[in-house]
Amino acid sequence: MWRYVRILITCARNSLVRDMSFRTNFVLETISSLSWVLMNLGFYVLIFRYAPEIGKGTGWGQYQFFMFLATGLLINSVVQMVFMINAEEFTEAVRTGALDFVLVRPIDTQFFISIRRFDWSALGNFLLGIALGVYALGKMGHLPTALQLILYALYVGCGIAIYYSLMIALAAATVWMGRNLTVLDFWFYITIFARYPMEIYSGPVGGVLRWAFTFVLPVLIVVNVPARMLLRPLLPQSTAEWMLPLFGLAATVACLGVSRWLFQKALENYRSASS
Amino acid sequence: MPVIEVDGLSKTYRVYQKPEGLLASLRGLVRREYRLVEAVRGIRLAVEAGEFVAFLGPNGAGKTTTLKLLSGIITPTAGTARVLGHIPWKREDAYRRRFALVMGQKNQLWWDLPAAESFRLHQHIYRIDPQQFRRTCSQLAEMLDVAHLLQQPVRELSLGERMKMELIAALLHSPEVLFLDEPTIGLDVVAQHRIQSFLRHYQASHGVTILLTSHYMKDVAALCKRVVIIAQGSIIYDGSLSGIIDRFSGQKIISLQMANGQAFDQLDRFGEVLSVEPPRAKLRIRRSDVTQTLARLLSAHAVVDVTVEDPPLEEVIAEVFSHPEEHWGRKVGEAPDLMEDRG
Image (tube, rainbow over the protein chains, first blue to last red):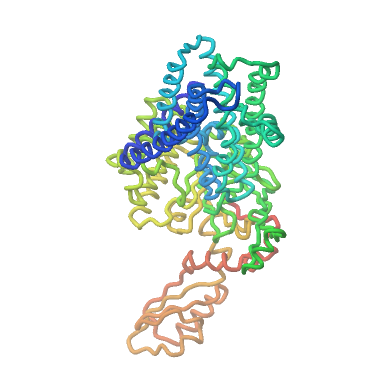
């Protein structure tokens, strides 16, 4: 276990050294990433000038929604910082045969290909997520309890695990497809649905979307569950909502299990590439 | 007991046949045609501990595929293999800690970082004791004369320097088996020689078992006592380097030095004239005709000096690679039943 931690730290360190050797690129990436988030935030501030909350009686006022955004930002930034760049590299490594050198290492292949590189430019978004969360909680005058914070951290971890599972499963498909440049595009399209509170998915179409993105591809619970954990105004109002966190845990385990199985199958079918 | 044991090992790929033209490509979206490529066909091989074996063959013969099978990178279609008692494609850590793979055409080091950073990562992956790591790293760097380059980004190294770093990365954990896939490809003569010397010394001092593929006969001649030739996925020869000429070449080269004033115009009566640079000439003749041809030559011409040699090894091997079935005398793919006694 300790060996894996040391490998993780070494990869993170090596990535930082590498990023620092291309300073201008690093600064520009950080700035563009932060700008995109801030522009989005400005857009939502504008919306809340015209609407006091998202949906009537849902409890998602401006600062509750900012807390929701902050949670999404935290989860997305970790995924971007650690897994996204590695999923991209994995698909390329399958196509070029560079995966050969990973397969001969005495280490869990999935672990190693998932953490080989870190995209440190996403750290800015992570810090912004924390700042936004603290700001939103402050504006609400809400001080979370220790249990809430622990559950929040747990479910942020579950959210990251679900996103990661989806991403690694899509990346593993490269082994059968040969070339898979749409991995991140597809992931991006799917995760768009997770950026908003569940309550907006109402009506016949919304109901179907809510069901599908909760029980089939459980991306809706990624941000919704941890955000709810922290926001007292959104205390569960029905038995179904009490079940959501339990389902979140089960979904996380299932996603990790299925993606692990798929990844192992992919490695069995790896063909390498001409040298 | 052999360190590497291979029996009936086969690997078949299904390869998509991409048709030419736009219409055919569009048709390919719905219906595809595939071709089966037998990269390795039922090979049988046993390598003892401490052997340095060359794996020769033309491009696409199945050399690299065999190394990838033995490294556990790909799984076979049929057959068995055991390396150090492990089945490679089970990819057990206990096995992966005991061998290393170097591929001359692929890079395993972090491109933008100094090699030393990649080595440190290897230290953690292979659980190498810090003291041993420092000692091995500095020893290998000294031997390969790259100690001063350890802190330089890999992308700024020459090809030869990078290959030396690749070798260090592969040897840090002191593997018992080393698979080398064209480690000197693209290198200049000096770098090739340096790497050859290093490998010879390292193999002798550590007793490591090495399987080497290379297109450079100088690598093979300098390093390997045993040569395995693979063609179209099958092993067609397993024996000594010199045995290749005995087995596959039915010819000899005669070099003549004529006395002054001798005519060169009728030399083609004796064999194929390879070159004429008065007073010297070279002829290629059938091995079985050597005695008779020499007698006729010496009686017809005033010859000052004569030498009889085997044709160059590269030439013989190129001929074998071009027509493997002709030289093997059977359908390629059948298991060989007669190998040279390797002694």
